[in-house]
Image (cartoon, rainbow, N blue to C red; front, side, top):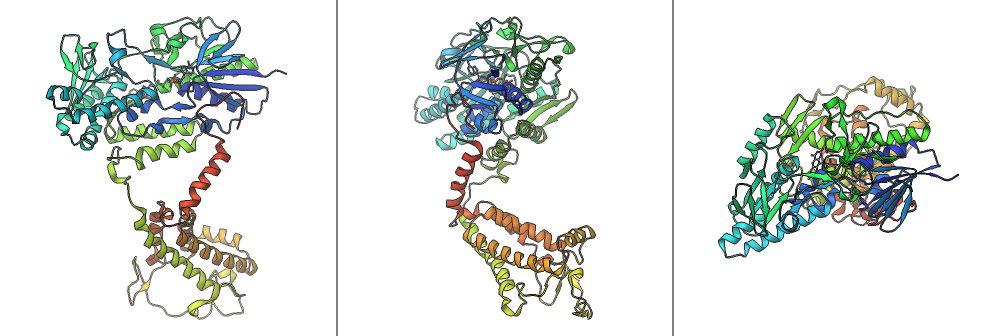
Amino acid sequence: MAKTNIVVIGAGFAGVAATKKLAKHFKKNNDVLITLIDRHSYQTYMTELHEVAAGRVEPDAIQYDLQRLFNRNKNVDIVTDEVKHVNHESKEVTTVNTVFHYDYLIVAMGGEPNTFNVPGVDENGFTLWSWEDANTLRRHIKDTVEAAAIEHDVEKRKAMLTMVVSGAGFTGVEMIGDLMEWKDRLAKDNKLDPNEFSFYLVEAAPIILGVVTEKESSKAERYLNKNGVKIIKGNGVAKVEEDSIELSDGTIIPTHTLIWTAGVKANTDTEDYGIEKGRAGRLVANQYMEAQGAKDVYLAGDIVYYEEPDKDNRPTPQIVQNAEQTGHTAAANIIAAYEGKEKVPHKSNYQGFMISIGSRYGVAYLMDKIHLSGFIAMAVKHLINLFYFLSIGSVYYFVQYIHHEFFHIRDGRNIFRKHLSRYGNVLWALPLRLYYGSMWLIEGLKKLFGLFGTTSWFGNEVTLPFSWLQDPTSGATEAVEEVAKPVFGLNYVYGEEPMMVFKEMPGWFESIMKFMLPNQDVALFFQKFMTLVEVAIGLAIIFGLFTWLANAATVALVVSFSLSGMFYWVNMWFVPVAIALMNGSGRAVGLDYYVMPWLQKKLGKWWYGDIKSIYEPGIEK
Ligand SMILES: Cc1cc2nc3c(=O)[nH]c(=O)nc-3n(C[C@H](O)[C@H](O)[C@H](O)COP(=O)(O)OP(=O)(O)OC[C@H]3O[C@@H](n4cnc5c(N)ncnc54)[C@H](O)[C@@H]3O)c2cc1C
């Protein structure tokens, strides 16, 4: 039987959400193939474009490779190609390199900047709607500032250090926010005075951030003003030259950098698909996200024009939540069509807006009632971003996001400033690693050989002090020596009896231990095994092999020794030391330097397959 082909064009928020839902549903159905086509081999995390453009994060931080996102979805064929045409009569998608037949199609090709034919924007301005846009802008700003640093003409130099963002919606505000924060780094790198820079936010409407309430709008305005951004309202950009812009009221602002974020329209690639168009060229969908005028074609994301009856017939907003929700509706209705079930009408549920203004301040208006600002608004934004990776099942990018937003960030450009990130030198951890590893090795060797007058754990005597394992004939429990009263402390003080973390095992832990070590034979095996574990941990830490795991294991041992009534507070330093050593210390004169990159490469290839810049048709997972 021929397979049913579901083709999804566009691997943005909408396309990825729809493909994930379809892949999960048809997981066990070998008759359905889902082909996801995008011109890139990765999903662009659009909501962070400004962070790349303004040097906050590295360009690859916002490229989420599709192979990594869909590696476990064996029914998804990823194709890197540019779609040229859709023929809904013959049910064909024509790309630069091939033609795909479809039974069901989802068009999720997003939008593009709308310059409203303002003269000069296309030729002299910069847009922010793709990874390439963000990278071009980043390079332009760096090059222009570098050139300004050696420019003697004061006026020209001033123009080169002036940056203007046109459009004060969330994209524009986020862009100018990150730019103003980049100033100090740009100035420092080029030996410039930060006061020489100028930033403008130009908005034709009388307010900025019209998507939120007046409260957020004015807070955002105050914060921007405080940080030196000049806000011009009720006055749009009328003309853009190479070295200046002209506003509607005739004001001229000399600048070499005009960033246009003043409007979005539908992706013009879809112009001739024969689907009815709504405002700004967006494609009209019905309540099932079916395209008007094209059978078996569904729409999702920014490209959709759908007036929501329960939202005063306002068209669906061009935001991530809408992209994901329309993507889910489109996928659900393809499933319904395939299975001959009843289709479900689209029902949106928007949680609100969160806008970052630089990396440390934000404003948010959530669920039509909650107003947030500052640190808390930014923290919520990060949590929502992290939740996105969980929603598409990507632990890899969840971890990567934490790395690029918090740990590997320069100049303290995150809500925790420099508290979480520092370009440090792991060599300083070497003495501590050798000391801590030796400590475990010595303890292990004592137990192995009974060194320094201790009892070997490798004999035929149970050394674990658990009551149910004691030999009743040995008399071990009989005479209890009179001991000094234990004193709490985190270091050993001469003459003081150190205090146990737990004097006796908690009941629940005792039940587990009784289950694990029911008799002396098992206990003997266990104590020998634990001895070898301690020796292995000691050696691993000393030689810097699997250092993270070895140190994590010591934390687990401390917890278990404590609960067993065998651990003193004075040794609690093990835990912070182990945590400190988990910070890549094994790579400083250690085997992890060689082993970890090799292992990461091998495991990455095994789990994710080959990561490529172009994925050809034909599933290779
Ligand atoms: C700087 C910026 C900040 C933003 N901040 C926020 C925010 O904070 N919150 C929020 O909710 N929204 C924000 N948005 C809007 C949000 O990014 C969009 O609403 C969302 O990306 C729309 O998702 P989508 O899947 O419809 O389209 P996109 O994410 O644009 O994806 C479309 C995909 O289609 C592919 N494609 C297009 N044409 C073709 C073709 N011819 N052939 C092959 N592939 C093609 C593209 O490569 C792309 O991968 C922001 C947008 C920008 C630009």
